Amino acid sequence: MFSNISVAPPDKILKLNGFFKADPNPDKINLGVGAYRDANGKNYLLPSVRRAEQMIYDQQFPKEYLPIDGYAPFNEAAARLIFGKELHNEIKERTVTVQELSGTGSLRVAFEFIHTFFPDAEVYIPSPTWANHAAIVKKTTLRAARTYRYLGNRAVDTEGMLEDLRAAPAGSIILLHPCAHNPTGYDIPDDQWGRVFDVLEQGKLIPYFDSAYQGYASGDLDRDAHVIRDAVKRGFEVFVSQSFAKNMGLYAERAGALHIVCGVPQVAEAVRTQIKSTIRAMHSSSPCHGAYLAATVLNTPELRAQWEVELKAMAARIQEMRQALVDALEKHGVVLPGGNDHITRQVGMFSFTGLTPDQVLYLRDNCSIYMLENGRISMAGLNPSNVDRFAGFVAEAIKA
Ligand code: PMP
Image (cartoon, rainbow, N blue to C red; front, top):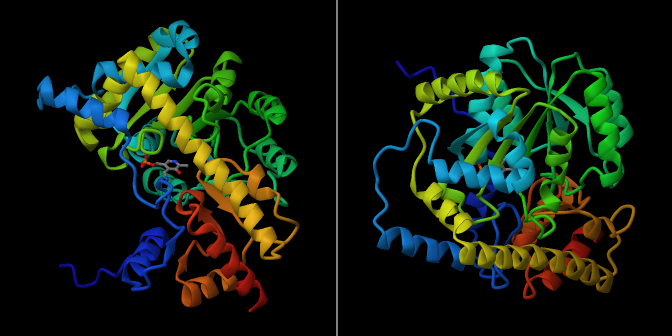
């Protein structure tokens, strides 16, 4: 029965991780995986989350099924976090929030719903974007996503992006990164978002915000969500996928949410029932533990304050590494094509370095440095003990 099934192409990031694990060099550096590492290169369980875990254990939170739409205190806290308290209060009657399997599950369920109710809608994703966007759109809508120009010359190609969006048919879904664009690290400048919204409004296009890095980009939870809030205040109906993987370090707990802001409460009620029936047929309900953790952190004032301090520290460490990398490159006489300043202008987990695929391969094969072929590095993989070594090897790869 299965004999004619061919092997699926491996996921590039997971494949890279395999190479990293197999490398016996004790000084190897992994800049592929998008997960936070502390200054010693270790993964990081946030102390606020650990305290929440103890509380959940002590209070014996139940393991009963959650409702289809998830753990209500989590949903409420997640919506308040992304929209801000004031806006959330204003829109909650016309907003559908459901717990989902982190950012990926949220996207998957939303696109399933989009495919069912808007089968002709085109979906536009930035070029480039997180690889799973294209895969999820294809699997659910059964058509390839269209792309809009995003990456220009060491900056966002705002004009190209707007031109492509102007050509999108009315009713298209436009996927946007509200902050910390993955993989480029370049965000749409604050003063250009108004122009993006004008084009969306004129073209009757639907914004879909994929928020995987709130608080992680700038260290400020409100700042990293302001684009979403501005869109809602302008009157857009929006989709938002929200992940707690990075900002709470809950990667494997799969804690996330899907929010759909509708025009009026009656419409939201209908959407809620349909989203619930979509979830029911996909995975029935979500797991409880990650939602308990996130809700406990968000809803316990002391833990919430502690989490914000920890989140700021993670964001600051990454920003410090950006400066440290620029300094180290300078020390080794490295000038990347166009200059090195883009590294500090970029935001969030990743940097698009500008290294070529050949240089990336050189680094992997000769220096035990693992990064994506497109030149993307995870800034979290750098720390005070390896940043100088990395810059030295980059100098070598450029000369090779
Ligand atoms: N969207 C973007 C842009 C991402 O970078 C990620 C994580 N790499 C996700 C969504 C989803 O991650 P998760 O499913 O772990 O929440």
